[in-house]
Image (cartoon, rainbow, N blue to C red; front, side):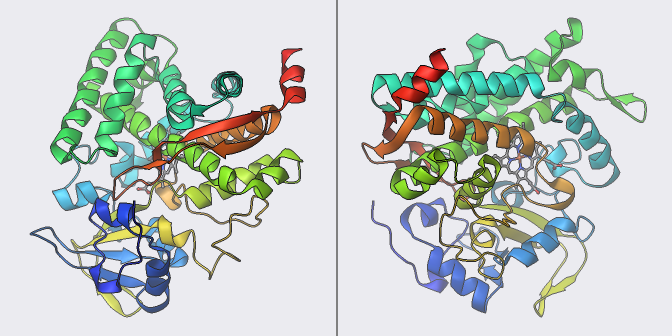
Length: 413
Ligand code: HEM
């Protein structure tokens, strides 16, 4: 793959190829310095939209769900496609009072206290997968390890039967991102429908025979005395799968890719020089798996002298905000010991990622398993980048995990 630096006026942030074929570091820096409220013009009948690149501006829009709404979509694909079918019912695309009430329900099931068993299962699963891969000599980290952690975790939470998980994983991938240029938006839409239909059946089953899983809990929840409808439950299960699988998976893959290229940072992890929580935050800042989120303007607002008019789309670019030199020292350096680290990987404000604790548990367990069972990571082939204007990362990452006999022996005891 050839990666080049594009000229400013030629970059179309709506086009997935922009991210696959270009190195955008210099582009983002120019925007931050000279055009913090940048207009991405219409292309081929597709609407134009604003792009914010500075950390503080992005945070300000995230914080403000009165002047900027999520209810007309919160990513380019829905914002440009005319809206989100889950608006007003699915947490991420609901605002105001209903968002607040729905969020309380989801926060309950995703709180650290409730998740202690799930966290223990993440630990056991991750350690087993890493040890197997170390024993095997080499693996595709994306396929054999990262694919099997977040999906297993969310499936456990939702009570998705074992035999359905591979099917669900394939649909989730097609729904959001792809490494296959022949898979188009229509295929993605079909995959999204497949997931919704799958959960419709599961919700019906749980209404008849509730268990102790999240679906059963949602089925038994109500807002102001009105029970959540089947559609409400399905849409929010969908958002847990979509929100919780690919983002965590891509972050894990990126962390291994980055550590393989920077043995000095791996050493700091191995030697216990950096706290795991600090390392997790830097991995999240660095990977920025969700490149953007977005909002629609509700009331006219001015930012850096630019007027944002009602109905216009404003996109918020983590890919740039997480590298903003106004906020981060040496932003282009991967530093596992970085503190403070005000990264925006989980967004900010009322829609701040409700699964952030779970995501951090997953990434922390991976880093600890690598630290304990390996002496380093080597890449053995090319990483395969995904093609998306929303997510960034790799769908294949061939590596060798170098065994640490002492760590492995200790774990056997
Ligand atoms: C919201 C990122 C993991 C479920 C968000 C938002 C971001 C984000 C940036 C804000 C979206 C917006 O403001 O429009 C991430 C990243 C993750 C991750 C980078 C992993 C590294 C998870 C997990 C789950 C999850 C594990 C579920 C178990 C959600 C949900 C929302 C959300 C339901 C909507 C929250 C709301 O609107 O109140 N996530 N997420 N995410 N995330 Fe995550």
